Length: 448
Length: 89
Image 1 (tube, helix red, strand yellow):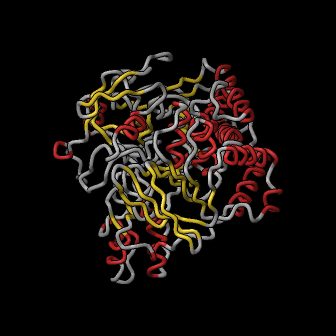
Image 2 (spheres, each protein chain N blue to C red):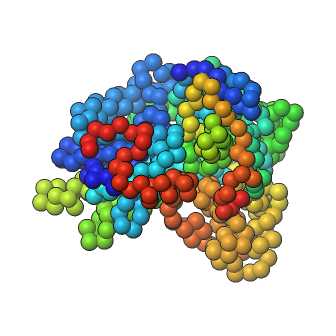
Image 3 (cartoon, chains in turn cyan, blue):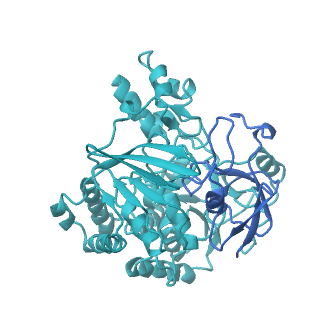
């Protein structure tokens, strides 16, 4: 077992790095791991002055964050391509190398979870077909390689990310053939005026790019069905009484962001209740890139208030409050006005991608009244698959409520057990027999 | 780094910064394998959360293609579910 760094920070985006720097500044050593091959998180992956995809504002933020990281390089040990598997009841954290699959265990005094949000994806008939991706997933990839995928792209769903991704694809010379937005974001213009200036500036820059490349932005529209066609996809779009059919090779879906606590240890700031755990950034509450550094800083302060109660008194940062208000306003602006309720989707619509369970399957299961969340999971296999319910729990409980009037929480379906990411039994067994080994085979040692 | 990976013995190019899942999205319109439950694998969430892009790399075992950096000569194959002893397969 590693004697180890004082604090483990999981997730090397703006929140995680800021937290790590603040903790290092207070005199502690930090291990900062990220599952991706480079730091930055979804926001700053591939960010540099050469990238056409990052604004001056965000590039400035990223430079500041990196400069801080550089300042504290001696006390922060960065491990990329390393995912967090889980934290056991004795306070041992298991990490996994994404390249070799091998595990290592560490026992820090505290863990800060800053793994970012996951996307809400509202099911549409055909969303299980290859070529259907999430808009954020597409974005993270285009950011790192700075090329757009070939073929026609349709971006659909709801929220400001749709136009951000569309504008970025356009800047790479490959504008999407259409954006299908289920809200009417241009109607409540007055709402938009209440947004912080940086948001309005960013929105205008996307809007100008979309105008320049003549990308159709359909408001109050939704996808009725995605079907296979020859080598690609056929997308049926509904806008009021109008039906539109588009061919596409890629359909990118997105319906906002949600926190991502599944498989993660819950927050604990009580020294007498085991290891200290704090959540920071979008995995705690999706407030976006402008709030993330403040959230990381705040988590570090809350941790330091436990470790050095005399020295640190955390206060709720103003920046977090401002961003919470701004995000709430954005939600109002992008409120969906036209989308099908789940129960009116065809029976063959997949709800749970991993287990391929459909609207019809849940309808059948719920013919018997009074099913508990546990029964929906164990008998129906909704949320039983590899994603642990991350992409179906919300829709499953929403559809169940529509069908029966009985409202379960997503958490009652998913539960919250580690591992947060999969690990082979072999790697765990080697960890057990090899507990004298203090470092994973492919990690260099700086602090042993 | 750029180079070539072998998808089912077919040589396909990759560019610097591309994840393996992104390379496969470009090169395979039919996805990159099928799970025991019938899910077609391929890039979806891009951040390792959905587990929907599992492939076998260099015969070493199952990885998320979206978290995998391709290297020249990498051998990529669909996951052979009959050979994997997962309790849900």
